[in-house]
Image 1 (cartoon, rainbow, N blue to C red):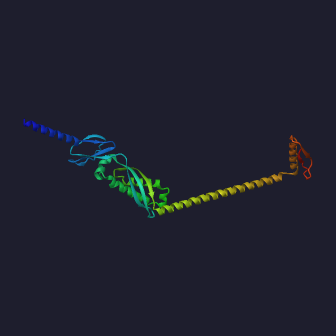
Image 2 (cartoon, rainbow, N blue to C red):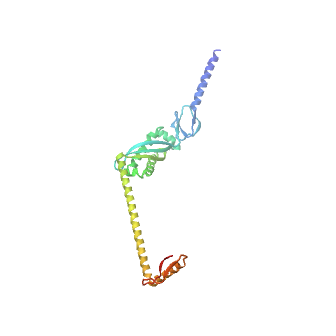
Image 3 (cartoon, one colour):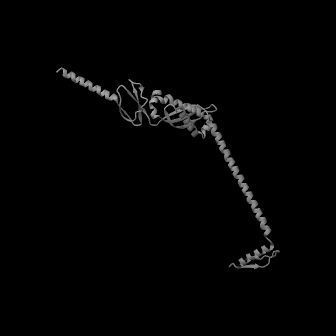
Length: 271
C-alpha cells in the first residue's frame, strides 16, 4: 500500500518532465518568419540551415531564435549638412528585410538587434554622403527623387555583405532652415516673374512683327491694284454696276455721262 503512492508520485513527476521536454522540443514558426537554431551542447549557431514556417522538433537543450522575414520599414529623421555647410533635416523611411538564406550568419555576426547595430548607421551615413553633394536650392526644388535613388544605392552598397536586403528608400520630407527656405522661395518667385515678363515681351514682339508684315503685304497689294486700274477699266466697272442697278425693282433716275472726265453714270436718287 505504501509503494502505490510513491509509484503514483513518480508517474506524475515523469509526466510533468515529459510535458516540459515536449514543450521545450517543439517550436512553431509563424507566417513571415524564419528560425535560427542554436545548439547549446554543440557548435553554437547552425550555419547550414534556416528553419522555415511550421512545426519543428528540436533537442530540449537547444534554442530556436525566430526572425521576421517579411519586408519591414524603419523611419529616421536625420540632421545632415548640404554642400555649402547648411544644416538640413531629412525625414526618410527605408524598406528592408533580412536575407533569408544568410539568416544564421546574420544572427551569429550581428544578432537580433541588427536594425540598430548596422541598418540605422548605414542609412545615416548614406544620407550624409548624398545630401552633402547638393545645395539647399537643389534639395528644395527638384532633386528629391534623385536623392532617394542615390541614398538607396549607398545603403545597398554599404550593406552588401551584411546579410540585409534594402528594397527602397523613401524621402518623405527635406526641411531647410526658415531663412534659407524663404530666400529660395523669393528667388524662385523672381525667376518665375522674369520668365513671365520675357514671355509677354516675346509675344508682343512677334505680334508687332506680324502686324508689320501684314501692313507691308497690304501696301504691296494696293500698289499692284492701283497700277492695274486704268480709266477704261474703271468706266467698264461703273457701267456694269449701273446695269445691275437698273435691273432692280426699285425706281430710280440714272443720268448717263457724269460731270467728271471719266463719264461714269450718275445715280440721282430713288423715287
